[in-house]
Image (cartoon, rainbow, N blue to C red; front, side):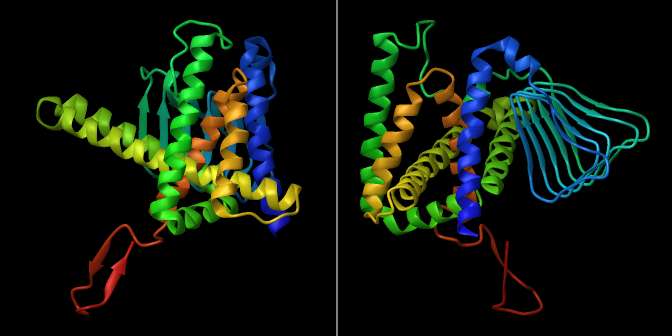
Length: 317
C-alpha cells in the first residue's frame, strides 16, 4: 500500500512536469490526446486532466476535474464536474449526480442530459489565475536577473515561514503532511473545489452586494486562501522531503530536515520555466486540499452542532 501511495505521488509530480513541457509549446499541447474513459469502463477514483481534454464515455464514480482543457461527458459521473479554463460539454446521454462548475469556459448540455446538482458557469473569468504564479515576470525572460532574484527572494520567504511553522505548530504540520502522502489525488480535487468555492463566493457577493459586503468579503477570501496555501505548501515540502529521504536514500531524518530538503527540491524545480509553474500549481492544490481535510492539522470537524433531542451529543461535520 505504501509503495502504491509513493507511485501516486510520483505520478502527480510527473504529470506536472509533462504539463509544464506541453504548455511551453502551445502547438504540442493542442495535439496532446485527450484522456478518455471508454464506454464500458469504470473509473473508481478521481479523474484529473491538466493541459488536455477529458472525455467520460463510461462511468466515473468520483469527481472529474479538468484544468486548462475541456471536458465532454457522454456517460455517468457520480461526483462533481469541475472545469477551469475550458468548456463542459454534456451529450444527451450524460448523467452527472453532483454539481457542474465551469470557470473560464461555457457549459453546454444537450437535450436529455441530466444534472442532479447545481450548474454554475462563468465564461468571462480569465484563466490566467489558474497557474497560481508566485511572482510576475513583468514580460522579462525566465532567466532574467530580476525574475531569478524575485524567485530566490520567495524561496527565502518560504524558508523563514517553514522554520516559523515548525517551531510553533510542528505536530499539526506533520498531520497535514501525512494526509498529503496518503491521498494526494483526493486532496488535489478537494483543493480545486475549495479554491473554486472561494472564487465563486467572492464573485457572487461582488456582483450582487459589492457596496455592502463585496470588498470586505473579498479581503477575507484572499486571507483565507493565503493561509490555506502557506500551511499546505509547508506540509508539501515535508511530504516531498520525507519521501525522497526515506524511499530514495533509505534514511531517516528529522521532520524539519525533511521539510528543508523538500523546499530545496521544489525550489530548484521552480526555477525551470513552465515546469516550475505547473509543479507548484499542482502542489498548491494538494496543499490546500490537505489543509482543508485536516483543518490545519487538527483533524477536527469544521462544525460541531448539538442534537436537539439528545442534549450534549454533538453532531460533527
